[in-house]
Image (cartoon, rainbow, N blue to C red):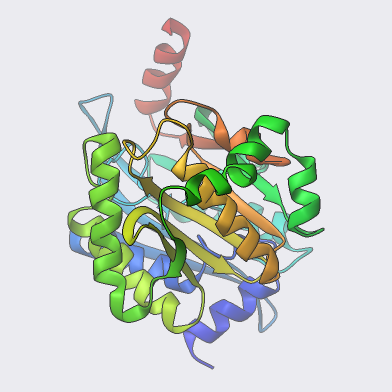
Length: 348
């Protein structure tokens, strides 16, 4: 069995995130951000007898903390903490068979403390920050300092009972924005929702960047980030896991939605629309409404809006019935960094 097949099998047997801890996402991320930067991959496997029960996809790099102190940082592949260059994944953790997760997490922490040469272990935007802190605390007398400096919230729409029931669960204003205003949109011309095919991905990303720049004064993706997403989208499209759509009104592309579908979960990676189209409706919310309806019809149970605020409204909260608390956990050891951050946190 290939490494990819073993990874997919273990992921399917776990509660780990099916996108951000997938073989496709992590290997593409490493190819575009980790390897070119000279970082050192350190994938730990955990076995019970001869059976693989868990994997910790780690890497190591040297960073400067507080602007001047070099640190040998261990992190989970998919995130480079406080580094704006790589694309950011969330829901990061180890991958372990159900029932073995805490065992593997504690074994990972023990391996790092006993054998690793590092001064910082940073776990980026994880939903299990408390469990990582508990795993560190289990090391007993080992000298270290743990902090949770960054927090975020992700929001999920519950489609498990179908789109009609989902609409009924929304507030009146939100339901109007994603459903009732469709007729007003049709007054501007023929409305057509089209899926971007694998052969049109480059054009789809150009449309996404063009519309994103109109609203945010910068493209959605450039450089290595654009190459990463183009390569990932190509791979996922071939597996029928890409839900990349363009909304045309009167023949003109006015909104682009870049989603990824993994089983019963759909992830909203990026949305961009023409902010000058009309002040009587929100193209973004209408496009999300079409995407939510199509997702429910395709058997998607959870539509993940991920983390991050809206520009003018907290639309993710309004569209969702569920939420996940996320945090970044930083574990520090050595003679200098724990003292420096303790002082920093007390002063702050």
